Length: 103
Image (cartoon, rainbow, N blue to C red; front, side):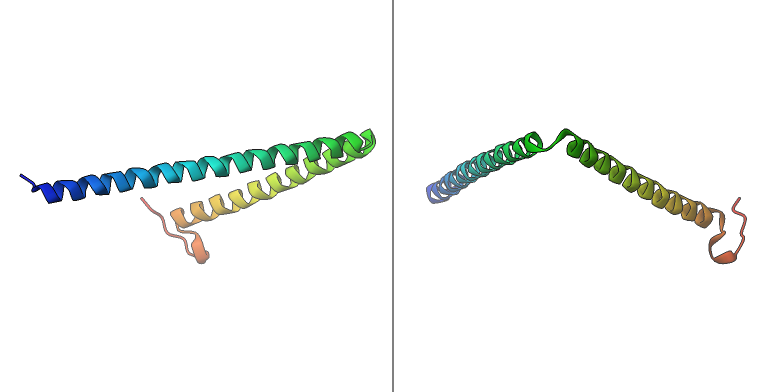
């Protein structure tokens, strides 16, 4: 059975831990509030930029973004195919010009 001093030390440690957790939660809530306010400000700025933009300019920008996304996807796909091909070559023993049959 623990002595009374150990029990109080344990209680103090628990209280200290709870206080730290509460402080961390309050700090996190503060950070989330700041992030939310910044996101709202950014959204307003974007809204006003698009609102002031001529429809033709908006369409050009949108097409440019779509083209860039498409190019990036093609690059990723090509890179994935190269990686897959090298894995297949390694598996069947075609790496570095050698041929080995794995049965």
